[in-house]
Image 1 (cartoon, rainbow, N blue to C red):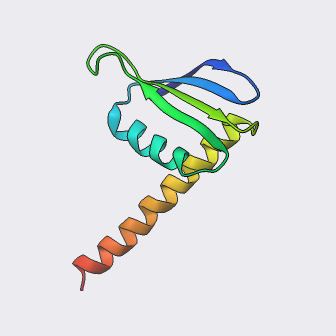
Image 2: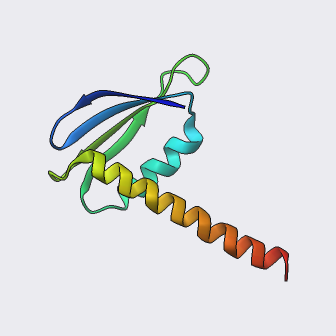
Length: 92
């Protein structure tokens, strides 16, 4: 995976996420949209086999880098919780 910040202002950011597909971007977009600081979170992928997704985030003025970092931490926390619950269920 490689990231390329295409554009960034105080409240908006476009990031190309090279080598990723809808799987990661859908989860990240969902977590971003749960954040009250986020006004818009979406991504565009022209064609899954020939283009890389570009994530767009618009905030209420909060630095979009901080918002994306927080969303990623939240996503990791959700995955950790799922692993714990899943492990408990299969070992019961």
